[in-house]
Amino acid sequence: MSKPFWETVPLEQMTTVQWESLCDGCGRCCLHKLEDEDSGDVYYTSIACRLLDIKTCQCSNYPKRIEHVPECLKLAVTDIPDFHWLPETCAYRLIADGQPLRNWHPLISGLKESIHQSGVSVRNIALHESQVSEEDWEDHLIKLINL
Ligand code: SF4
Ligand code: SF4
Image (cartoon, rainbow, N blue to C red):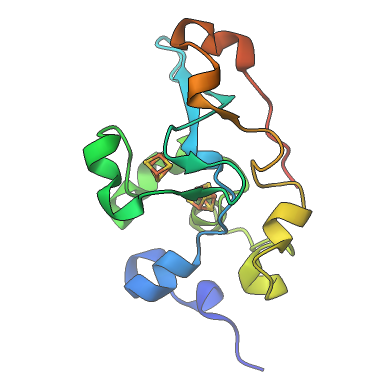
């Protein structure tokens, strides 16, 4: 049996469709993060970007997200050296680090829901941005599970 594309095609050579399909839909990258200015370490909070639908873990206005959230980052191949800020479970980071996709990834399971059933998505942990004022974000730091 031939190997799947993510095991044979380098990130830099993937088609747009292949690249987009790598996203597992966890929503973790859409949680607000705090950075230690001295060390550069990144800490995740449970507070979601205002455009994240915290049930589906999808962006509610992906085509126009930059208009509403200018700081939103679109992942690109040129960002690969900066992938350290992504969660350890993120498919882009796993592949950039030479690791396999996990069993709960929809490309492996064949099921979109597997990301939620696994507990990796933010469905049961995310708070909407309007629920917490920015000065209190530090009170909502979380440790993301790494399955
Ligand atoms: S963390 Fe990675 S896999 Fe998860 S939603 Fe963000 S880009 Fe997609
Ligand atoms: S604008 Fe959309 S894609 Fe960007 S961080 Fe917010 S929810 Fe995620």
